Amino acid sequence: MAFGLALSFYRNVLFEVTLQNIKGENNKLRQQNANSLADLEYYRSAQYKDKYAKESLGKVRAGEKMILLTEEKQQTVYDDKGNITPSEQQEMAFEELLRQMPVIEHWKLFLFDRDKIEELKKSL
Image 1 (cartoon, rainbow, N blue to C red):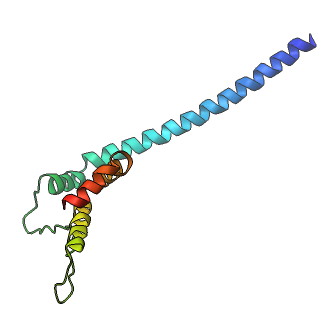
Image 2: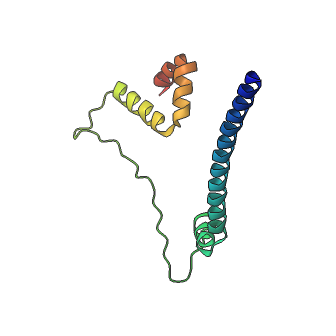
Image 3: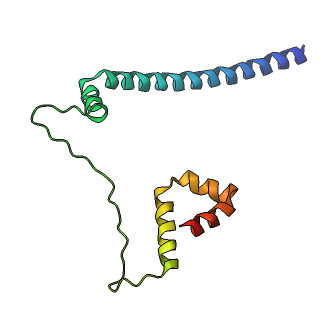
């Protein structure tokens, strides 16, 4: 009988722990639901529709002005006399090629095609 009582108590403790875990999960789901509803309300608002029209479709209202921010290109600086050796020109061309190349391509070359890096340097 004592064993049965201990087993019953243990099951009750496990049930209470499980119940607390479920309550915690419910609270998390309620918070996520509230956040999702707030996002949905924003996406239905006139403010979002206006932003989407301006960014994606290029539409502006009468009297508004649009400012486009672009990345500034850096120009290569030469010395005053223009004395650049062919090897320096080759190195500069290679560096410019790397600047224009996406970073993922840098890693692919570095990890998988190291010989191709030398070929690119020589070809420029």
